Amino acid sequence: MSDTAPAPAEKLLPAAEVAEALNVSLTAVYRLVRSGDLPSHRFGKGKVRPRGVRIPESAIEAYLNDSLIAPSEVA
Image (tube, rainbow, N blue to C red; front, side, top):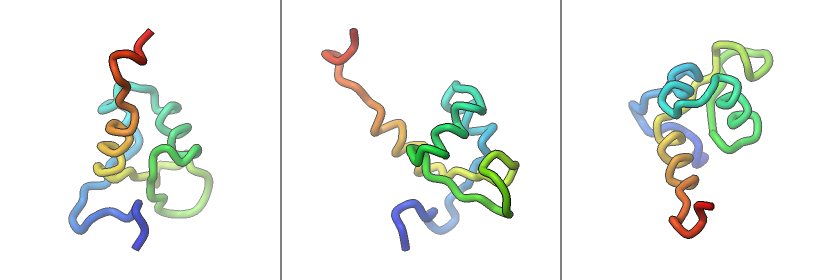
């Protein structure tokens, strides 16, 4: 099992809910998914943008934890 696989019974969120939770645009969420910074699952075929993209809650928490900066890094 890979690190990005959801835990049993873990909630998978659509990109729109992730955008709202992170207070960013939907486009920003898709960019994070494409870059690999935000692991996701895609249901169905096609490009990343279709409605089939789901992001595990744990991936959002991990992304937020990885993006923390020290007060000395704030300009």
